[in-house]
Amino acid sequence: FQHTSCPQNVFFHFVASASADASLLRATISASFPYLNFKIYRFQDSAVAGLISTSIRSALDCPLNYARSYLADLLPTCVRRVVYLDSDLVLVDDIAKLAAIPLGAEKVLAAPEYCNANFTSYFTPTFWSNPSLSLTFANRKACYFNTGVMVIDLERWRAGDYTTKIEEWMELQKRMRIYELGSLPPFLLVFAGNIAAVDHRWNQHGLGGDNFRGLCRDLHPGPVSLLHWSGKGKPWARLDASRPCPLDALWAPYDLLKPPYSFDS
Ligand SMILES: *[C@@H]1O[C@H](CO)[C@@H](O)[C@H](O)[C@H]1NC(C)=O
Image 1 (tube, rainbow, N blue to C red):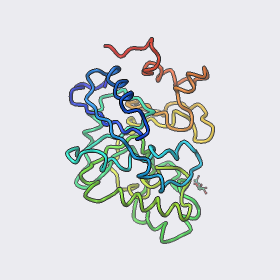
Image 2: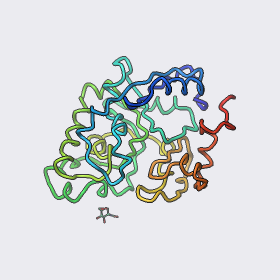
Image 3: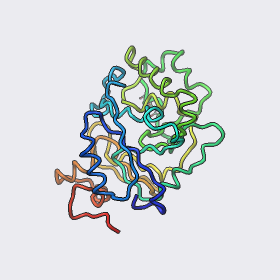
């Protein structure tokens, strides 16, 4: 909101757990951003609870983590395109540029792709040794992408019923373990190799550290439009514990719960 050239054009759709105090959330957002156009949607945990299998990181098993798969159902049909953003990131560039990324004639989703990442490691040997499963990626130049930052064409998503496609993989995962992480692998199964590429500057991810220990990480080389503390360590927790990583200083000015910092400009 602070970095966009035309804040009047920005509309935030907040997805909150149905058990969250919506009026407190609404009051907090309004107090912090008096001019923000926004709406809060309640995500019913029951929509996905029966589909979640435990992952190697318990934080990933939270039902709200799967809300990104249901945006096409949650948001009104007049919303045709959305930029999905995780809650552990800061944009330091104009979101209008990201929202305007071309999706071509038929792509449903755009995100930064990482073709040097070891794609094999996102799925279990059970998956790769089963030809009817591993053939999913045949004839696809599948690369890893992070699901914390995605431009989604909701019209195309609805037309192709991609929510059902993702749920089908989650149902399979409950029967035979084909991956270890939470909401990410079903997105890779459905979309990897078929997305519009976005410049890496739009997701400098991994700043939380690795998935197991949360070790400090440095920025990736190149320009930065978005800082993403994905991974186990979170800057607000490390700052509160007085054990921050060096890059957590970039988060501190945006921490709404720290009174000395102000957004007035
Ligand atoms: C990629 O990951 C798989 C599974 O974790 C591993 O067996 C393989 O050696 C890795 N490949 C490279 C090039 O690191």
